[in-house]
Image 1 (cartoon, rainbow, N blue to C red):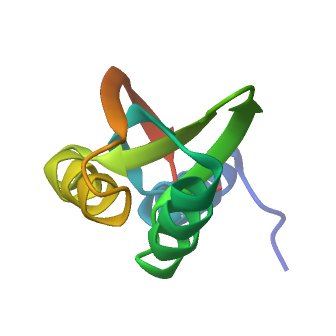
Image 2: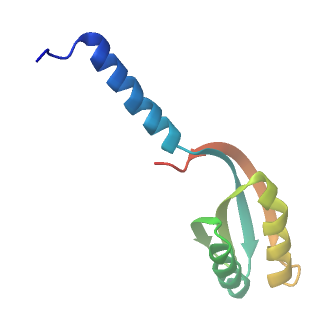
Length: 104
């Protein structure tokens, strides 16, 4: 029985890297900050989670500033959701966009 050679090892390593890369999903997400009343913030967060939006940290003062990360095409939908659930009282501010690895 012959031992493994360097070309055998290189081929196995390349196959493993290809499988790892195939499992990765790199997507563009935009940070969006929604500022609203406490009552509206709870409703916005619950509905955002139901829709599968990434919900980040929240800052609390006399209002709530919630941070979300959504696909570029979902920014308008999140703004409409915030407007609806806050009766037009929410302030929506799109922030920076960044690539996120959903595959781990």
